[in-house]
Picture (tube, helix red, strand yellow):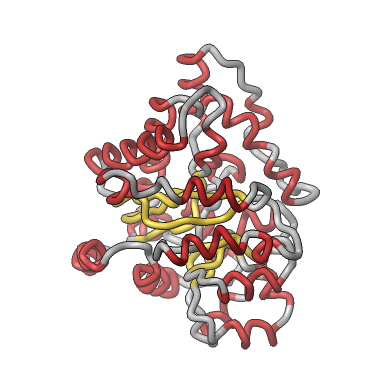
Length: 335
């Protein structure tokens, strides 16, 4: 029998959580009323089984309607941080695409400042450390993505809370090389890089991402299609950000049991379990771990291990990592 309270009490970190895809229904209802915007709540969560990733991503169009002001962006970070701390999360990196929040005259800088303000408030209200990842989009031009990356450390507030960059969105067979200029810019500026790759079956994107400087891979489930490829990936030293329930939903995998965590452990490939999009997938981190536990894909001890070891892959400075680790054992001692 799985002890839910014990599972919640385990200190956790989350490294792959999209801000817009993770706001709560309460947040959406409140913002819709405040802004006098009609939202079709039947469209904010994806079907249990989508045709593909493209269908899954259509949910964001409805959600983004109420995330076009500074206040709504700030509130969204506080909302997701509140959800996260209820899962026992002590550190979370929230990623968002600034370009998607400029439909009502906010500038890129406005969006960056709004989410960082939200992170600052969330940390003052909850027992959680919050940092921000800035997403360029794979279907946008290199120039557009570079323009966003250029602004992420313009102020002290942004420098403190924005810890890395990502490229998100749909995936082609050559997605990474198409964004080579933007990725190289991030690398030249010594920005921490995580990249969505191998989400739609193309293993080449995973290796291209690592070669281009990604320290973490978003999803990477294409690796599970070929055990030999997992053996090769062992040498990459990149962490896999695995999002089980959304990967089943988008048909990135056909069944949860395709996620071969035993092989990752055997090969010493670092990985972490994440939610991806809480409202779109109707999930939280406890549900993600419960799904794995119920399918005998993970143990409680393994959950403890991967969360503590994943701190090494958080895009934090040494001081902040030490702060988390200093408190980690005291959290565990309380279990």
